[in-house]
Image (spheres, rainbow, N blue to C red):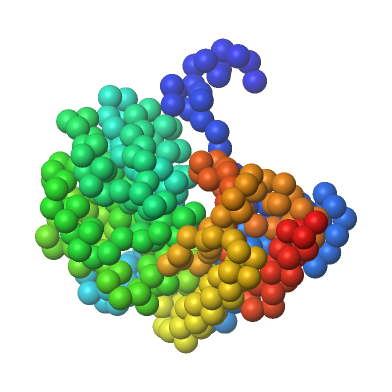
Length: 368
Ligand SMILES: *Cc1c(COP(=O)(O)O)cnc(C)c1O
């Protein structure tokens, strides 16, 4: 590309580095010529899709000559019923990532500020910078959000605050009382985004808040959730925001008319009835987290207690060589140096046998 076009790109885009996803299995197969690779790198549901969701998606494919329902009427109505909220406050996204983009588009731009924590989800700095806004990164406390410091960071230029509960890649979480005290301190002109991508896993923990319950008291709040994690539909891309109707109206102004495809709409609607699948996701995750934590104890490694479907493991030294050694053993995990956590690897919870393969490979590379 000619240099002029780079120079002419929007200011925020010029210096932007694209999001780095976990290494795909096929890529490692090509790189190393090995088989039986296990990927525990993208917080994907290890169970495979719910058969109920799969059947609904297949049925929807018969109608793909038609555009999807741009309003997502059926999915929104079902979600509203399940969540006990009004449909007018639900905004559907192509993954909940889409919601983060809408929020940036609506409120962020040059001259504005967006607050988030150190070690927070990588998409927050991305959307902030792309919008040309200033990122205010607040140092973490015990790897988690320091809400008091985040509230202190609010200025007249603050428009948005992103909070992931639990946070990815740390797995740290905030209690109900902490979030409420924080919301009390934030002026209502500032939009607070409570990113609950791992809500279904977190909800098993006493004191972990349901963000929806704050909505009545805080009209500046947006809660985001997704079908990508516990519901097992990451590849279909469906997420949603829950907010006041006034906020949803603004978000919908920048939403592409058909942002969620018809197979995704059908699968998401159907999977909400497969509560057995959800429970299995939660159970497999809890036992898997315990399995990984046990292995850490055995190897005298520290880890950050996690309410997500992943564990951030502290190797006490630069972790990149261990990441590469694990790759050679056919194990893909996630380096998190780009989150200012160079001594950590993030390991997604797999099936029991996948976790065992990781633990075995870990023993091998630590001994080497
Ligand atoms: C995975 C994740 C998301 C979004 O995923 P989508 O697939 O776009 O719904 C959002 N926030 C956090 C913190 C995540 O880890």
